[in-house]
Image: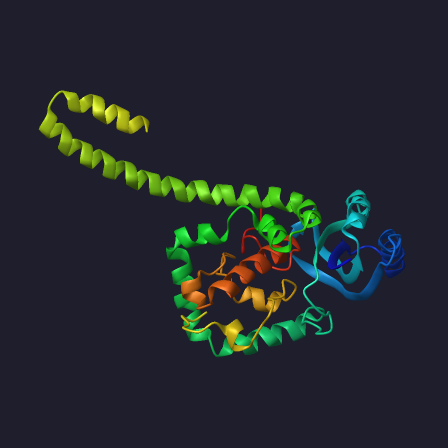
Length: 219
Length: 72
């Protein structure tokens, strides 16, 4: 028996009745396993997505916590994947109580909060941004391809990995493009450096130098 | 985000960084949505790792962007 947390994002066009009916249907799957229990369900309500998902700009967020056997999850997630009205879902091992409500529902409140927090750090923001743009190497490390895999391995939980698979693909695409861009930059520099070194050798070794440079270039 | 010497999460004794708290996650992104490096955030190793995981989960759930300011 383990504690899990699931976040659903429904299409915002759905009515609350539809959503409740769906939640009930999903949660029945969990409760079917013996000793399982839904411990908390929290509706965040309609919220703007940070990026469009299947051309949806908004989503209806619901967070639920439950405890069940790991074996109950594949069936549960299969149901979620089949439902076209679910834009996204994420199942992770629960990290504690849902008790502390977070500033999500009301955009106004959220904005105020952000302004308040940033007010004292405003002067420093630009400095940090500069740092961010300078340091491509570190960004690479952070944005490594296995976003979800990291999460999964932390949790020792196969189901997590499954649920994140689609996400991984997205991640990979994005990150790869970044990576190659960065890598190109780096490798260009390195090649130039290599060539420079080879040139020096060439001068020393005479005719043999040409072959060396070719090999270097292929590498 | 200022250059910090101490980990803000340690200061507040945060056990787990919540991937659902977009307000917190946003503060550790550049204006383009990249994760700020540790030397800019001042986070300790543990919390920087947690933060990375949390931001990536938050991105999947469209709470924070993968790329900020890019519209097709």
